[in-house]
Length: 289
Image (cartoon, rainbow, N blue to C red; front, side):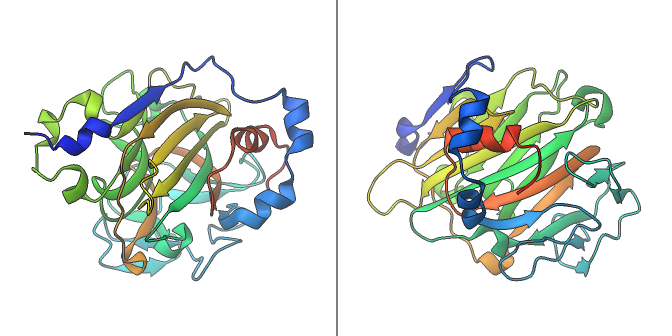
């Protein structure tokens, strides 16, 4: 039997055409880039190399032998992954030309983990045609976890079935959200801790902005935990339910390009939940922070 904890589960899905925020010009005028920079905890621009330009602790990029991350080698050692000069949203970009077992990753310290009242935002640009470019199977352009995709993890992914849905997953500790160890296939789709976007607007010809926020994870006062997904400045959906992440941050990792074939640019992680007008500001910005 599913835990009664899921009675508090709420997902709000927003039509892609619905717009949140002011007009582009007024938003750009009201949002201060300096305020965003103050909240910036990690920034990989992929200009020249993949090491972070802003980082807490070790900002180097690593290649792990697999998702298990038992061996980490500094730098990018996959022949199919490269910095492409001048091809990015801003400057250069990181290109994944094929899928492979080794994983490109950063140290988990870039996620400013907090055992109480943890909030933040993750922003990145992507360019691909998922239905044509990706090989069969699930694909996680980014996955952030200590353990696994379903155990204290954030990720955005493309579903395996065509046409591919795009999803935000915010999975608490496995024993917290799935204490009865119900098989994933048996878990009701509407109760899965995910925001799903049908027919997402990805393209080989244009960059797509993806940003997700989270707030009040490991809440200390009973306020609900939330995560939200934005695409091209527009809110796609909100997940609201109790969320618990128990990490040893030194064992966590930010992993890029799992089964991904396409381009990535301007990965940013913020120490707080960005507001809707700040999300739109990043989408419309003519240059990176």
